[in-house]
Image (cartoon, rainbow, N blue to C red):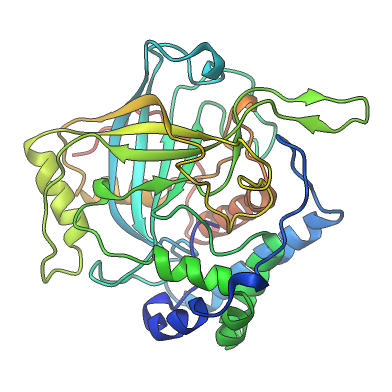
Length: 374
């Protein structure tokens, strides 16, 4: 659950017409206090419906082939790195992994989002999934399949294509049943986000990465009514802190090629930032269509990701990365995912991963960060 619906590259004219519609038809954002989310009664049934919808489509799509990810099947490079927390990190942000000078080996997988293997020359949302390893602390109980990881998901845009799990289901259901036009015409904000977010880049490290969904930073407080409030809610972002060369070429795989060329000669880095929820309407937890304005809530650097020189093109490493499972609920309690899209991810991403690995005859594993490939 990280990408837009299939067929983006075939729909630019359609998206433009949708984007020009009035945005007054946008989804209403629930009226919530700062630091709260609003689970919907019975939403677990919807989450399972999403899993079934996507799994059935994968069975049809890969009836006689190895099953790839439901979205983001093409990687633009899967590389190792190390996240180092700033030594002078403000005490307000010292929760979970964010302790002064703390360091974590990690894996990062860059990707194109569309559900088929596509050319890097085509406009698309880009994705980045990141897994920190050797993480210690109290963990979220579900999905419970990893014990020492902290996962983060990013898109190359600052807003999602669906506000909530129901829109996510409706979006893919419409795509799979030939009703995409109708959906986009009745969801102009989602169409606008798709139009703005579909881009081309010369290097995956130059993308402005954003989590597009919110997360806790610290443990919640529980009121007398039993409602939990998170004192600090954030979105995550990554920004380059290195010179990342590369040009678009005739190759369909130039993003991975440019990254491989860069890392064969030198290093790179990304700054890890947070954006604070300052207003529940401008920075909603239950509407992922809404970007959080940087002018109102500036990005705050907490850590740096150092990427050493390396080679990542061996078949063994590619297969290893293909079989990694990412889920933002692979997490410490202090970084609990917030909002409906994230609550759906807890169930759907586990279900899809289980199905894919089992169908491909792969046993689930948890990376250590010390893997070495020839």
